[in-house]
Amino acid sequence: DVVKSSDGMDKVILKEPRGSTVQVHLFGGQVTSWKNERAEELLFMSSKAIFKPPKAIRGGIPVCFPQFSNIGTLEQHGFARNRFWSIDPDPPPLPASSIKKAVIDLLLKPNEDDLRIWPHIFELRLRVALAPGGDLTLTSRVRNTDSKPLTFAFAFHTYLSVSDISEVRVEGLETLDYLDNLSERERFTEQGDALTFDSEVDRIYLSTPTKIAIIDHEKKRTFVLKKDGLPDAVVWNPWEKRAKAITDLGDDDYKHMLCVEAAAIGKPITLKPGEEWKGRQELSAVPSSYFSGQ
Ligand code: TA6
Image 1 (spheres, helix red, strand yellow):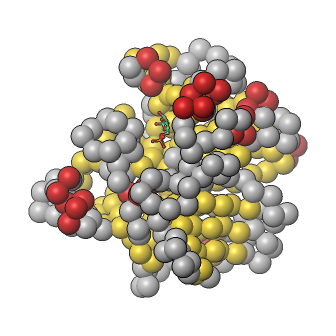
Image 2: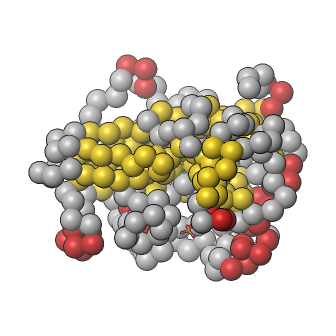
Image 3: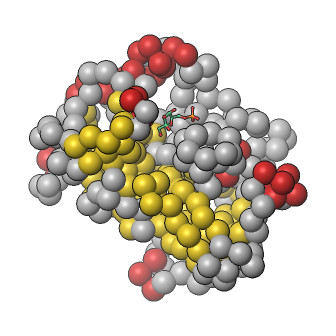
């Protein structure tokens, strides 16, 4: 369903028969809600989120493209997250395995202002698919429709909703190298068993396994993030002091959020003219007792 809004903030609602839903704003091509069949919200949305341009909405899953963070000459995290995307009325056919999913395809092509700051013609497609049972898959495709090479970084800046950040553990990043955004992206090696949180964390884990588990002990819920074509994973929680400096984040909101982001940052992607790249992030939320992996 497309929900038109008088303020221009149109959104798409996907529903699957068992009751899970996903909401996608055309502004940013951004997933802004993902609810399970008990109507529990699984993504974090800031209590001070501003649902209007020009800044990206604080929460859900903003798309970082063609730049991550300030690594480049563009605005922080690139421009895709604060442009209006369009719905593709004639998307490529779904693979047979996806036939039962609720799906929407959004498109972003550069406008004249974008071309002035980043002179590359491209087509960015985001397919949002909600499976029966509630798994959420985001598939991004970038096609270089220009006559010169295209180089970019990409991230699904996923804000997960957690009951209490102090009770959360992330598994799947042990022993990996990471770039620490808190110390000028110096490279370190993860030493701990699993990641837990008691202060600000802002890291780019490089070349991670394809599966990461985010275990919320208090809620007895595990998010399983699987990815493909996105070798890196960002983990971010601003903690108390930094949260206060972020104007569209409530002072205590940091306790209830954790960003874990499938990304391609360490080695930017380069496409020759006509080439296409694909990246996928799949999220599922399962009761912790059902989860025996990792
Ligand atoms: O993904 C982590 C990060 O790059 C952090 O460094 C932090 O600044 C965050 O994203 C939020 O960025 P934003 O531009 O949305 O305020």
